[in-house]
Image: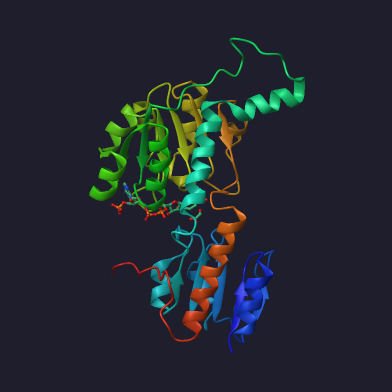
Amino acid sequence: MARILIATAMFPEVVERLRTAGHTVEVHEGGLPPGALSDAEALIVPLSLKVGVELLARAPRLRVVANLGVGVDNIDLRAAAERGVAVANTPDVLTEATADLGWALLLAVARRIVAADRDLRRAGFPGWTFLPPHLGVDVAGKTLGIVGFGRIGQAVARRGKGFGMQILHTSRTPKPDAERALGARRVPLDALLSASDFVVLCVPLTPETRHMIGERELGLMKRSAILVNIARGPVVDEGALVQALREGRIRGAGLDVFEEEPKVHPGLLELPNVVLTPHIGSATEETRRRMADLAADAVLAVLAGRTPPNLVPPPRP
Ligand code: NAP
Ligand code: GLV
């Protein structure tokens, strides 16, 4: 029977399921201790853990890495493939929760909810005024630009349709069925940025998407526009974003992800027109349980000699 390491806190029922299948399971919430990997055959990891050449070299018996997340930019897929280590992720089950969080950020920035709450707690309810300090902007009927029209991007668009928005998207390939169903139009990135009132980033982090939104792209956005990032921090040049927000070149931003997590650019912390959450896109009780179950399914499949669900294909040579 195999030794399974889980490098984060885990639901006890999931640990029990792996043990009941006959395996030894160790849960290491505070990081993997030295030597822990030497005879491990399976590893369940949070997406904050970098699984690269160095870690893989310390795990000679490893057969599977199950990532608790859909994005696999934390894993060196080539190095894993070279060592015959299968990689699995958790797509689909987190799509709706992540789209909800994107919308929560969009609405929070548009309607200045966090600042209003903070001021009410600090100074009390100021009385109803016609022109309050927290005057927001309309969302309904505006233009929503979605960068990355995959599972999460389309879920963001479905919510936008409910708000009567015009929907634009940028993706590598057309999505005729979803475009028809949602009334969405595929346009080049520059056109999307200059036409949208709200821009929501939903692309994976790849060499092509790193700093996809920098000074030039922020300069194309409307001064009244709001940027929401629920993808990965490095998709945005954070320094350029801070500068654009400081100078009022865009209205605001809602950010769930940061360029150097867990660090947050100090400039962002000082800005009133941003809402920040600590990478909690998929963090609902139900979604995290489904993700944990999928990761356990993948580990059990590989240890039983089967192909895991949600196997991430190795990169092309
Ligand atoms: P997905 O279904 O694979 O969708 C990704 C989309 O991005 C696809 O439509 C893809 O286009 C497009 N894309 C990729 N590279 C592009 C490029 N260079 N230019 C334009 N479009 C590009 O993935 P998903 O399940 O929606 O997840 C997307 C990402 O969200 C994940 O990789 C992860 O990083 C992030 N995420 C964050 C959280 C959070 O907690 N904040 C939670 C879940 C996921 P094609 O279809 O044409 O290839
Ligand atoms: C979360 O960020 C994920 O990729 O699932």
